[in-house]
Length: 165
Length: 165
Image (cartoon, rainbow over all chains, first blue to last red; front, side):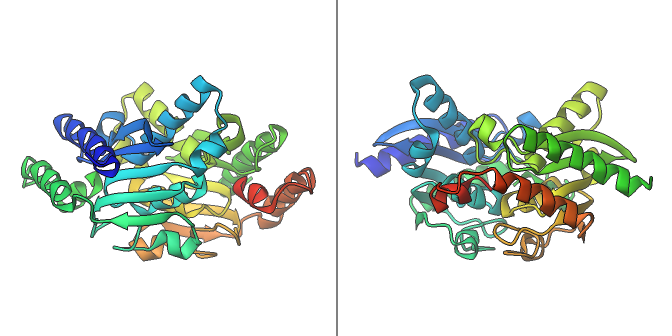
């Protein structure tokens, strides 16, 4: 398996774990020097915290990784490649820029909250320098999202359903 | 003292604490039913985490407050007024929208990273509904930022100095 596919598959593992836990199925890994150093998935419902997206959980994981190895976090973040199954939201897109990551590969676009062009182009507006590749296994990412929303209560108020994404 | 002034002063207490700790001096409080329920300040250097802005730290504090009192976090966030000494960045501006807070009062604008109109108007672009009042004690907020940057190493590389904000 090509490296990129291997990393995206690792992100999908996280997304499937999110789905099994009743979370919006988004998974992410941070890759440094060709190795996965942090894995994260959406944990918004579990934590009751709307900001605990897969990417943000990977930030915490990366810091643990740096601490355990005495690595300089600035140098590490600058060389991190982010693999995430769904386009980051505006919050995460700006966070990745502030962290100074090297590049971002994502699966499907997010027409409701996407921060990398679909709704707002945060990296462009802020001049963030990370490279972006989109559409890697987009179909699989959409399939997982559909699985999740299929299980949702169709009677739930629209704005509540929205909040979960 | 008027309530609003009291809450902003509580945010300034946090900002001064950040300055004393060698952090970019930004302070924040979350107010619910006319009471401060969470206090936060920038802790980026201390945590090595570029996403630990004052507002994000208040999110965690609010969740602790909710847990300790058995309060529904969704209902609480929807009625939170955010007081912060400096305009939120794009990440925080979007996070506040996703949390669904009621309104935002901030001090000075942030010409480099402001996400509420100065660089990017995140709430407008995403259709976030929170009300915004700006310019409350803006001069005091700028003064604190100047105090911080006065103490910075003038020989530090520009992009490193930038990262700290």
